[in-house]
Image 1 (cartoon, rainbow, N blue to C red):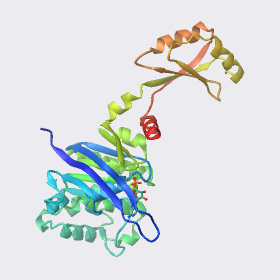
Image 2: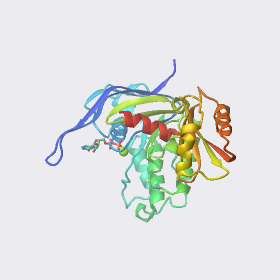
Image 3: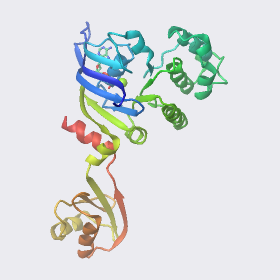
Image 4: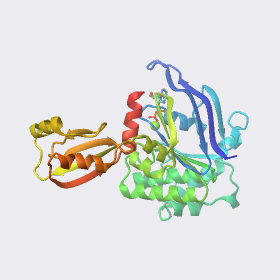
Length: 318
Ligand code: ADP
Ligand code: MG
């Protein structure tokens, strides 16, 4: 049987009311399994419950009800082993400004009970590109370096499962590329990766499988390829030799004999977008209809739906 990195059953979390806030049901009964070895994306709009779920996995937030099993260890029955199997790079920067990266990693290793001869501090520092800063105080590190240190801290106990909560929110392209290169490398070495991100192109590129949560509920979980496949719609964007005015395209819409299921939209730049279902209609049929209407085609582009479209479609419905 396929090994599961994470098994979540009926997970709920209600944050208690405070003097200033009402009680909040952040997770409303989530079932989710994440296979070992994958790069798994947990997506959802702001406030969906992603960080709550991740912080429960990490043992930082106490669940209300449900079962959480990490690398085969039930969190209630085997809390120590469950915690040892997972490393989390949190969303917020939280670190002691008077620690050097080396000291921070050694302290973290101590917290996890990693024996001195099993520590890999120098290797981790090299992996995240902090070798030169190993002995400077954290308060002197740039924002990007601090983030790299957070990733480094998540790795000290060689967790089977690495969780990254919005690792690239607000970071520059260079750091983002470095983070992803590290994530790929760790995954190739066998680490299961779970990440949340706001950047859907990023999830599309990085993740084998994706779960989308909204308002504390799981709305979909599938392979990235299948999720994209669900969006059957495709567009051909045609640039006529003479740009289309809105009036002319309204006329055209009356006379054009488009195959069933194909729709036409006028774009502000004078191009025409023909949207069709690729499983039902071929691009050829669409083009034939355009030519038959006597439109001379100057240029043509094809647009595929991305994860963004899947996400919008699914979260809008819910
Ligand atoms: P996400 O990471 O998907 O943006 P969160 O898990 O941070 O979502 O938040 C889910 C919901 O729970 C939000 O409505 C948020 O305001 C609420 N929430 C998060 N943390 C707390 C907390 N410590 N106390 C009370 N409510 C919280
Ligand atoms: Mg969050």
